Image (spheres, rainbow, N blue to C red):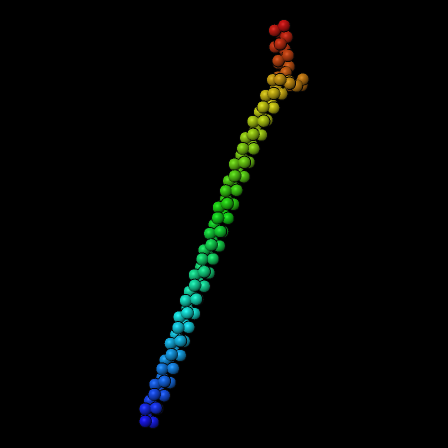
Length: 112
């Protein structure tokens, strides 16, 4: 009888030890799963940050292209304006000190 009790106690102790071991293993698995989730989230955050950086760089490149195009258009407009002003001054409001005006004045005397 005593042997039976001893064997039952030993079996109980063994089963308790096995249960503890299984519980520890379960906790380890849960912790590993949580760590995997955290690592996955960190990787996603890093990917999002990298994507944001790339989008920011693309936006900056577009801004530079737009600035360059705007500067080019402004220069073209300024050149057209200068040509317009030069033509207007030359043909519609001739300067008295201009040699072209002297030629025009001389030519107009022949027409009169």
